[in-house]
Length: 153
Image 1 (cartoon, rainbow, N blue to C red):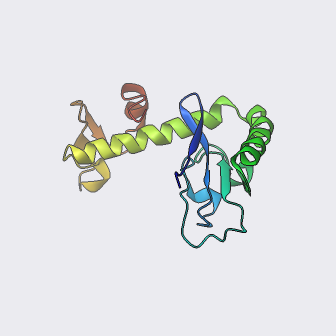
Image 2 (cartoon, rainbow, N blue to C red):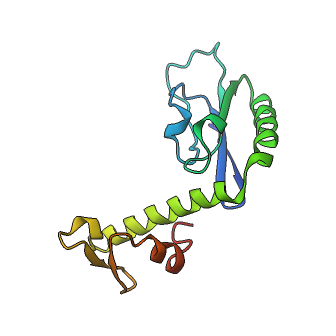
């Protein structure tokens, strides 16, 4: 059987996935942003085979995130669309900006580590150097968000 995964994006942001149900039972707040859930062995044939989740974290609170399961892709997609049409009008630019900032911060951190540069908090003196050459201290988020905007895109 060929597994199918459908990913929906709102511009740059992955907002959901529809895939065969994994039965993983992970709470919505653990996922960042939604990941595709693969079919797991042990899911009874009598159970819904398709699971959908909508939301992203950080950015929207776990109570705003929604999900469900369905017997077919078509029914799961319909439920997803209804949930998105209900959620999307409630979202502001602040919700998306929170997610972008988190994405960029983590991409910056990983780039620093891959270049062998310690983060300021990893040094006794609280200082380091960005991969761009700029000297930094703890509390360097403004530089990350201005000079390295979109690094995680």
